[in-house]
Image (cartoon, rainbow, N blue to C red):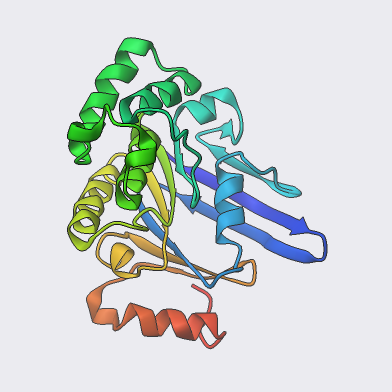
Length: 235
């Protein structure tokens, strides 16, 4: 399995959000880091086929981003995901399953499994408008996992989660990275420091660093700050 990003660029008016980025990613968890405005969200939206690049290509095992076959193996949690407040939790997952083209019986089984896995079993029949912020975030994670994606893209997935929930999430993502590709963008460095197989750092629309990370390399936060300030070197 390989995600191939080849010389991808995107410009909004006078700002180049993503500037000729090329990456080849295989199974594993990738922590995508960078300051606000570095281009991370634009890159992830292009990987998910939500935004088309101005130039360059993105493909997963020869399937182009945006194609139906590509979307069928994709899971995506945007930073602000849309939900219907009057829907019940389980009802929302069934609706998302229909949008993903899942058979109804399979979507129902998977929804119940994920509600239990993410600690939402007892509130699955409650309306989403009654959920806390952390509960809504866990529901967002559930919808991203619904179709057992081979490519999982998560933008600030632990926002609103308490420390125990974040630890559970990190274990879950670590397990998913054994069989698929997980791209995780977050400002909470501890979420990626211990589970990411590689760290990707963006600065001003470009990839300023790519490399494996381990505790013996030192403090990740200090390293990232040097990269953000342009004091590091390309990986």
